[in-house]
Image (cartoon, rainbow, N blue to C red; front, side, top):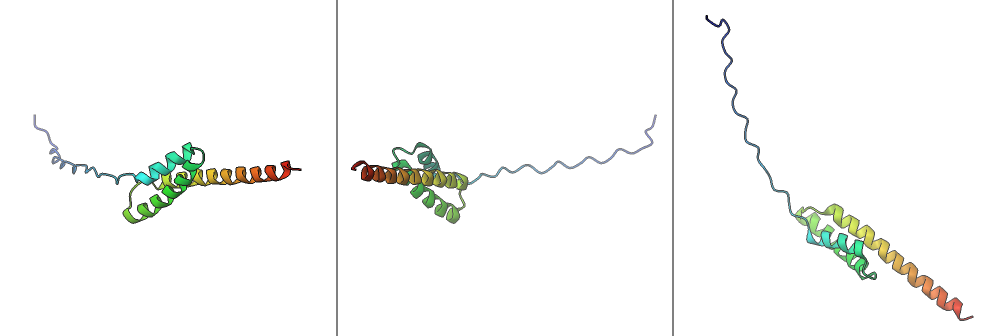
Length: 100
């Protein structure tokens, strides 16, 4: 028998999906985060702060990834530097009060 309805025209193929590469992560941001975690007798905290600021400047200039890592490294680094300052202050107070 004869089919009374015409068949629909074939649909065109969808366009191919284009993969775009994301920008690489900033190395200073990674270093800042790792050093902020490790602290390393507070030398790591100071380096985390330095590398974090370098990373943020570079990320703003080059649009690389890693802003969150840089900020986390800065926060951890400043916590470490603040802890170091508190330990030094308590040591000075303890030394001054211990001589009585």
